[in-house]
Length: 285
Image (cartoon, rainbow, N blue to C red; front, side, top):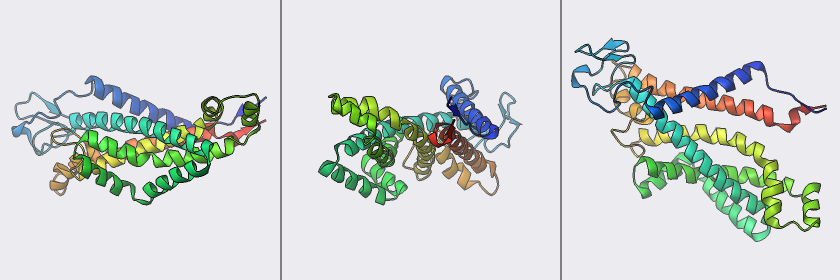
């Protein structure tokens, strides 16, 4: 009987905690449960308060302090999590679907079509990821939606190359030849037989793109061409009050930086554990 060798208990625990943390953050930010104070409301009298401080009037409690405009840092971090989570999920889903279809059709078709498509993909990959995203945003204009399309376009080549390599190997297998022999159409062979057998690397790659999208969105916002004020974004928080008041109020930069690091680390740990589970080389008798 085939058994599946699971990763270590530590990796499984990390992956479970990562999934729970991401899910709670996204749902809490979406419903407003974890946003006790309006994240864009300015409280001039409460500016630059330390963590665990109360407002001057004593009506509000700021668990993580306030920024230079008196806005609650906890609410802004959670609202920024909503932007980062849903931004990265949207980018990941679109880029993996588009890149996967491009790689699947390119590898299965072969010939001149495959060569042309792969040269275009190679050309996109020669340009640094962030530089290409900045160039696209410069054309489309600054903003969160423009940034999402820029990150999506720059993320397509990686799944296209990965799926192409997997399909090139899969289409030569015996079961693919058997499908051709009984008269199955190319579309049925690609999407019914080959695609399910290359889903595992696509799923693992999606976790990598998820983390990369968060970093890229934060980088674009840090440069001022991503999410625009007063929209709370982790990258914008770093370049705004975090950069201006770093020496006197370092938590303004540390908090969004730690949030980005935890999200990326959790996503990468989840991807590593998922890779160990889906890797067929870990299967034994």
